[in-house]
Image (cartoon, rainbow, N blue to C red):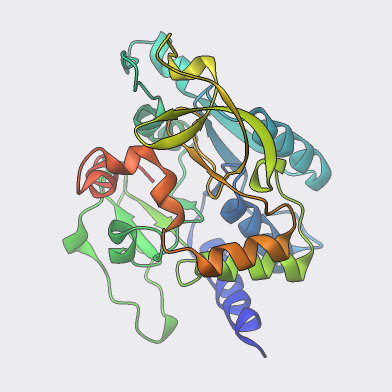
Length: 296
């Protein structure tokens, strides 16, 4: 077994543990490379049977069109169930207030929609593609991360996971967030994608796009950015290392339009993939604060 075989085996074991320990699990799917990798791992864990959980997407309404197109085509190919929670519905019902101003984003509003979706369907475990190398708050979390009845994460409530033994016991109203690829790195994911010959949304590969520069970052020109006369649109060759809301996900200039080129580019980079996420720069503990409030 090479190291990718070992990572794959660990992730498949975790997915099967979820299926065995929980009554109503779900797989959170964003359309990004990490959640696409989870889907491939789920295929290996459970085919030829159906997945023992639906795919759940929290749709901000400000997604990249390429991502939504990929999501719908993938779900049709898989023949699996997709549940979509819409942030717009949370706004319309008055549960959240849309941000205003030039740097407004719906990214933080996803938390309420996610918690409502979990409560509505009674999910007791939510599987996601977060990895420890992404961000320091995520590095603190266990693979089985318990959330209280309000969806909050408490770093002091971490459970030991010695010898790959995972404790999914929870009280009524609580749920567990599960991270099967927690021990993977960005390079591991890309090497696995190359090995498995997986297709990805086109925005991961270098392409020409209209951009503006905001807060020192290249952003895809979009009406979601509340652009004004100070925003100068330029045509750049870019790609995206991470996929999120268009209002908070920056691009990087790149010529890498093949997987091997992307792997070489990442290997030489000194900036993490989350370095292109403006929502992580709100404060020093931005991600941890969001997680304590119920964010994934």
